[in-house]
Image (cartoon, rainbow, N blue to C red; front, side, top):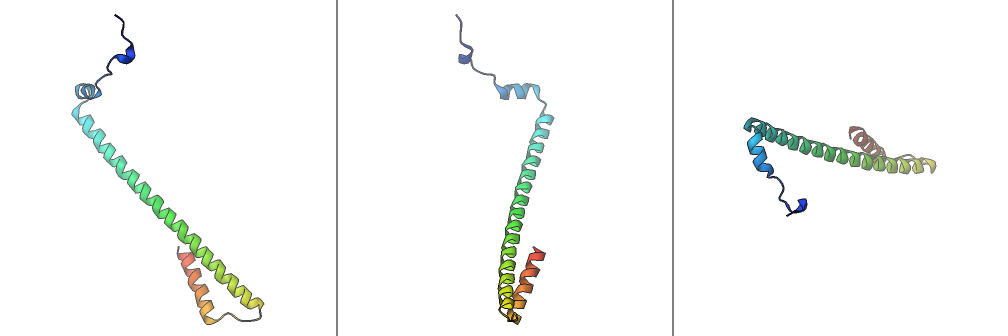
Length: 99
């Protein structure tokens, strides 16, 4: 009688591995997998750090732009920026450069 190949059970990969792959190679494969997992975690963490830095830079740029616009408007109106405004601008500039 002919059986459809799809009805036949597939190979037992665990049995094949146990029979043909030396224990040392299995151990090495497990160690490499653990190293790969650790590297992938480190890459993910670095991406999170980069995203946070990118967001911080964007926030600092926005703050710096707004403060500069306020100072520009003050100067255009004939006034001088107050000491508080100058200090705010300097703080924003410092945060931007440090980010």
